[in-house]
Length: 355
Image (cartoon, rainbow, N blue to C red; front, side, top):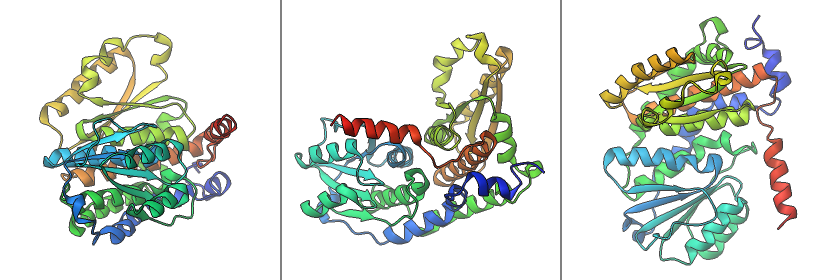
């Protein structure tokens, strides 16, 4: 029996329940939608023409997803701010959304304080912590949620869908229960073929994890799938405890492909995963084949995943769900506990000592 098919593997390496959190993403998105479906914000928040999503790691990536979704509809411009400082152009027509799962992220707290000194509208998404306390004390609207697990990345659906609900409430995104429901059903359909109970011989996610084992993953998202590629990278980094990188197409056709041959020692280690979708620009889709030919000539392993969902939200969420399960399966092959983040804990402790 494959170790990926053996329940003992998950009991031994995943005592904190990463597997259940990952496979529960569709239901998590529905739960979050129920919390924001009827969201109403102060009237002044309707006078917004740009959104800045402030956050780090898994609390920031929702901003990248919102950016591509709103761009496709020609709505408000969205910027993700990862760091201590806000963009200097923030003004009275800017909505600053400070997202921190724990509510203690020091970069986000810094940006929150800066935002209070501007004329911008503010909103907070968190489970609590100092950020929620500051929001309460200053009258800033806060969307809070309860989550039993300490890992922010496992709460991806809670943060993302609440952010989408905010965008909908100010008229920046066309979203309703039917659209979200269809995306959830697409994820559930995908899950039925790649879930833990599906044997490796029939499970495309387990098979891909097997091909990535011992390799250096490089995930390339076509067009609007670039944020999904970044999610793949960070999930592989954190869950599987491995180096992984991401980029986007067609951008890599204007730089990266020139350097495919060197260093020669890296060529056998690399494995490129292209994320493709039915809704991408036809010329972008042509570039997948051409880029694959160049990789083949350079001796770099590669493959292409195609998500047939025509709705951008459904395609993005399906790409995330597939990648999250791949990261779990690779963690099992690597013999590591997916939820542990010892290096992040060490870094936070060091920074705390130097405060």
